[in-house]
Length: 397
Image (tube, rainbow, N blue to C red):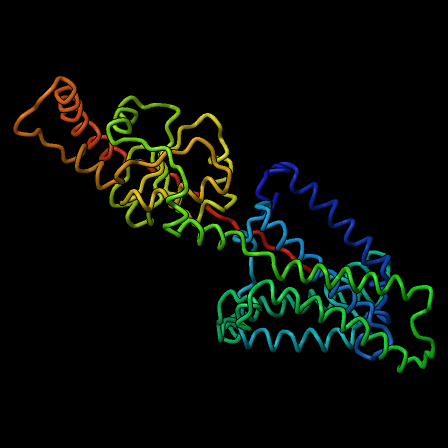
């Protein structure tokens, strides 16, 4: 389901699960008082900051869960959709929504929650939202320049600030805690509430603050799993300590001609290099894309003999180190790389003199394999290649 790497929930159940989550989300919104325009507008007038606290809590929880699940290899961050940033559209749209929030007392999501329990003001707000959607859709040509202007790409806040992911996570946790205590002080000033945090709750608040800071520190030192594995696999000293099982060009050629059902050829080169020379049945999975959910099922199959091929043996061993770190089983590296395969199989020519019987057998095999595999490669060009279409998971309030 979604960007989770293990297919815990199949596509057939996705909509049912989404419906149940939606019902639970609406229930929580209503129980938190978010169906009340007075409570929602309180954040702008300083007498009720429940909205800010809930949003900060949700942001920190989602952030911590995403970072930790990605580190454990259970979440494919590449599949999570990031809204592209169009600067002026964001500024103008944000201003319109902010003014609408102050005047109407709802945001689009909470207006639906209010309308669901019969709030008249929520129904009017929802009607205004639909009217705005209609006006925008009908007048799109007039708004298109603003809507698509000042495109900045798919930005992440920590990248924009020049921070690491962990440093920003700790910063956000501390900012949330600061906001909680600051808004409590503002509420007491605005509502003329004299009492501070009750003594009986101070211990709980202290424990909560300590736990939040501890989580922030944990996130600070939680490495980006993908970057760490790729950096480790690119270290030649590390590769020398990693044992990779090798497959010779002759064995690979034999298995290709025999159409071995257990053979799985994984081409770890770039897409353009893969297109120039594609071995029969080869699938293009680079070391960087092995982390993606799209290949999880294929790489998890236990009945396959996977041979990783690249232009050089070193590049294939790097990909093998990544595969081993990800728990991919039964992997082999093409000895000598594709350069050796081309020289000894595809462009093979008999030597001037042949010695023992074993050399003669190898010569006969290569002479037969060279044109046969060349034909298989030519035939493979006319067949559709295995291409995975990645659909990023969008969502949010």
